[in-house]
Image (cartoon, rainbow, N blue to C red; front, side, top):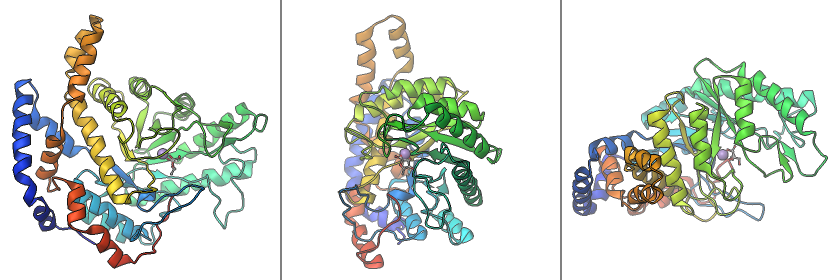
Length: 426
Ligand code: LRH
Ligand code: MN
């Protein structure tokens, strides 16, 4: 299913007047306060977030999975769905594949389809947290950290295969997340597990093309519930440093113990030039993989404040990989992803309104109240007309959710694919 510009324009018709009134009012006020509105709008339009290929169907938990009709049942249909998101939002111009869930059957055909939809292939993800049916070794007790050399070698070879697949698609990064760890005290020797992981990552790193990055993703627990080898940013940073300059830390927002100060982690990783990218989502308790900005929007804003500061002051840190990592148990996956894209753009736009110079001077005067006033002044600004403008300037929908519904896209997908298709992924 392809959405053309006419579909979008028709669905925008009834919204132009209200948008123009809101945009003009806001743009006037921001310009009076010294903001370069056109620059902010173009930054929003350039900000592209990769869609996780494993989150285009309904997710599930160990307690059950409630399917969503019209799900994509192959990689071609997944790219089509990312195409729908990109047509509506103009900010979803990339996809992140998970291997082996998304091994292309025809590389040229899938690249042509993605190119036609202006979608590029972002980081590819390896998977050594599930056993493949034809595998000789099991990952039950870990993969890159496993006490068995044969298991480690199988996992290393898988990661090299994933790099090869990504290379054929034009991807430039490998994301490594390990479930490796233990469920009980005494089960693992922490030092052996960590050193095995370091040595294994170095073997994978040797297979990384010169212009690639390795993104080391950390997580405190699940599926292991006593220890995780790459449990936090410190472990990830040490392992990345142990590999070399092309290895970085990937921050999944859901991979932090309660009340962690993620914006401080982000700030220091940028200072050290070792922040590689993000898996955006939100959570109330654990790795809930909920819609971005649905639980803690202010925390997301504070993270973007550090990112805007870092992008201006830390040339030592590379361009970041912006990706969503979510799972949908009760929402239409495409509507959930549209809301996440909107929340990311909103946090970025609000952070771009922070007067960093005024903030820096208030900080140097220890004017604590002024610091908060500057931050919250930006946060309290309704920036949605700026997001709408960025989408309009690039051929997108003024309100992607409304257009998705007024174009009846889910029912179109059900007509095309039937009710009981199931997408690979989590
Ligand atoms: C682990 C994780 C990782 C992916 C998986 C789908 O919780 O965040 O990024 O490989 O989800
Ligand atoms: Mn993740």
